[in-house]
Amino acid sequence: MTQPAVAERLLAWTPGQGLAPAPTTGPAAAVRTAGGHLLVADSWLVREGRVRAFDRHRDRFLRSCTECGGPALDQLTAFWRDMTAALPRTGEWFPRVELAAGSLELRLLLRPAPPLGTAVRVWAAGQLDPRTVPRRKGPDLDALARVRRRAITEGADEAVLIGSSGVLLEGATTSVLWWEDDTLCLPPPRLPLLPGVTTALVQDRARALALRIAHRERTVAELDGHEVWLVNALHGIRPVTEWTGRPMTTPPAVRAPEWQQWLNGTAERLPDINS
Image (cartoon, rainbow, N blue to C red):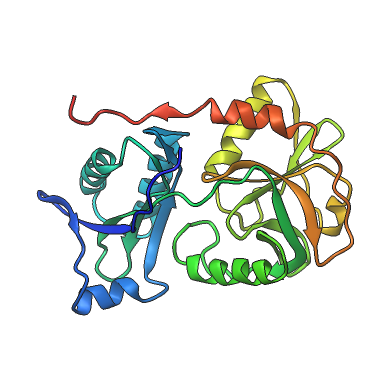
């Protein structure tokens, strides 16, 4: 569904008062517009009031806030309730919940969803992982955005991150999965990886289908000739259809269409907070 152009809005949460537009002037606004001031962030796609794995996003956000000394659980729960009620039930949106550093302010960034993709071109040069807190989404968003902008200048949509040994980790905004014969593969959890919500859904389905899942260390070059997927909460599953910056081949993504259809079907209606 195409919706009119809408500006994003930042809403700040106050206990007992709920969400209200954040100030656009003054010291508080200056802090909000500066880069690198998020302790925690989480985001997901909302399409006509439906979301995939909304509870899992809630659990990850609350857990991350608690781990970094954020507000008490009762405040986090109240914020989540007010935030859920504020999410639009029509149109396509890509909201982000935030915990700000310093003030520990809880916020909701309401923003329209960007165009969605069903395939992806990847800059295969391999960027050394720039993150300082790889297992928590939020603190490194600015650094990852710079990596992705560089990938775009190289004719790609996304970049892959590698460790100091050259082993593949994940994408700047995605998790990486691939197929070796009939085995669904992904990097080992001992590596510095963000716990991806969409990756967990895919693994759950693979287990339900009795498919083999393997955690394997691979370099980017070792993905040559394999069906590779980049997955996240915005685009879902996107097979890699082109590698740039390295001579690599991409076979037909024979598995992706059926899995994409399944994943789209997992979206559920947002809860009616007022009922």
